[in-house]
Amino acid sequence: MSMGNNLARNKMNAMSSRRYRSLRLRAWLFLCLLLGAGGMRAAPAADSLLLKQAPSFVRKDLSGHRVDLSAYRGKVVVLNFWATWCAPCQLEMPRFASWQKQYGPHGLQILGVSMDDDAAAARKACGKLQVNYPVVMGDERLGTLYGGILGLPVTYLIDRHGRIRAKFKGETDLKVMENRIKELLDTR
Amino acid sequence: MYRRHFVRTLPLAALAAMAILCATSHGLAQFPYNAPSATSAFSIPESQLIQPEALNRLLLAGGPDKPMVFQVGSHLMFAEAHIAGSVFAGSGSQPAGLQLLAGKVAAINKKKLIVLYCGCCPWNRCPNVGPAYKQLRDLGFMNVKVLYLVNNFGDDWVNKGYRVEHGQ
Image (cartoon, rainbow over all chains, first blue to last red; front, side, top):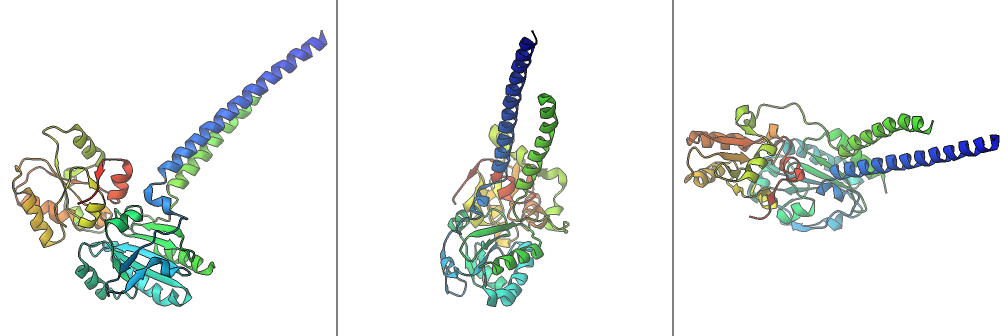
């Protein structure tokens, strides 16, 4: 009798255990689905470039010199998309010029990409803002290569190996950006 | 007992999932915008703003109430992507742009619903929509709305999955 009771109890425990495992499995599946959905929401097209090789391009800068992104391998590159009509862009650019001066000898290279329709306007603004780094004119193709530049400013930080390490959109805390640049400069 | 354990752990797991969701959606190195400064976009009365969802609904519905949509920002960014069916009408911050806009609307009935948009910069910094809106009001257009893109065209229209076209 007692042995029969034990058998029944063991059977019930086994069933409960199986049900618990099944519930636990379902909970984990639900969690994975939730996280998957979250990841998709947080990853619009441009963000997919993070930790990947920066798309290469060759352009003439506003002074007519050749600019080849791949030639800066070994340096930390700050790739800044801007325009003359973009007020936050113009707040950043004098800081970029000062960083070029300060960190240039440590391996920093700032590159500007003007998204203006008119090179003359970009040239004039660069003179006014005392830009001391190369600026090329952007186009639809370059914008698309970088995930679609559909709002300014946009700045990419590219490490010494040519990989995109950070993206800053809109008005940015420049102290945060500077700290990220310093980290990248310290990494060989 | 197992079920009690499960019931106890599920809310924790859900909380953890929500925390991770929030973290990933703000995962990029972004920073909140500064306090808004007085710029031209703020000259547009709030009643004349239209939200992206509302415009998308109007465009999808079609019919006689379908608005004419004009982009008054950069041509380069228009070529990258623009609202399906919209027309480039010149940069609102430039005299040449305003002239182009006047030409584009010349043949349109003054009562027709017109929607202007830019999205080149955050709303509080947009130099284009304010002057373009004023231009149309000065020309006698009575039904002008401006698309409220708080961050930019990419975040507030393209990434929401609303219809776009590419090219000139």
